[in-house]
Figure 1 (cartoon, rainbow, N blue to C red):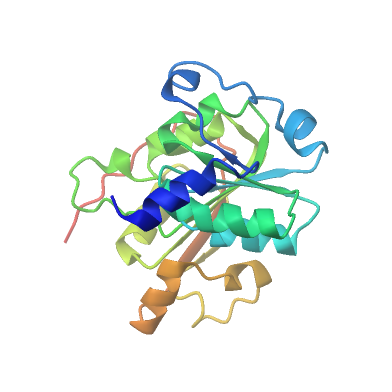
Figure 2: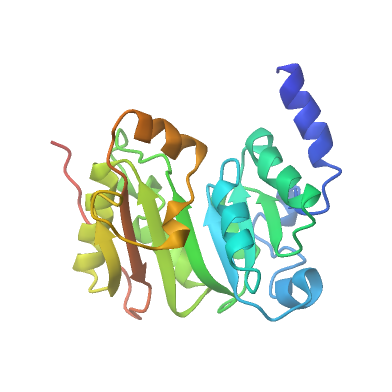
Length: 235
C-alpha cells in the first residue's frame, strides 16, 4: 500500500464528517444513526440527499455548496478517494455534509423509511461484463433497496458516460412504469440548463476529454408494486 494511501487513511480518522463503521455495526443490524440523522447528526429537518459510489465526493460537496438548505451524504467503500471530499468539506466548515465508508449493499442499515429525499448515482461501474445485471446500481434489486428508505416520489438521478447503462436503466424504468422527469443521451449537447448538472466529477472530466457524451436520467420511485428486472442483452 502506498504512503499516500496510508496517510489519507490516517487523516480520515480525524475528520468528524467521515463515518467508518465496523462490519458488525451494519451487517444484518441497524447503525446507531438510523432514523436519527436529522435530529442527532445534522440538527435540522432539512431533506437528506445521498450520493452512492461518491468517489472523491465532488457531487456531494458541490451540491452542498449550491443547496445549504439540504443535507448531503456521500457513500463509498474507497476511503482513499473519499478523503478528498471529507477534507474539503471539513476545511470549509460545511455543516450539511457527511460521508460514510461502507458498501452500498448496507445502505438500509443506515436509513429508515422516508428518511431520504433523493439519490444520486454518478459514473458507477456499469458492470456490463457480468451476466447478472443485478450488480448494477440501477438494477431492480438495488432500486428495491432504495425504495425502503426514500420518501414517496423520491428521486433517483443517474449520470454516466456509459450509453449501455443509461439505456438499460431507461428500459427498466419504462418496464416498471416509473415517472421520468428527465432523460437524455447527450446532456451537454441537448442544452439542458440545470446548475446542478454542471458539477463534474474526476471521471467525468476524463470522459469529456475523450469526447464521450454524458447521459442523464432522473425518475421517481413511486411504484408500489414489486419491480421487474429488465433483461438487458449485450450486442
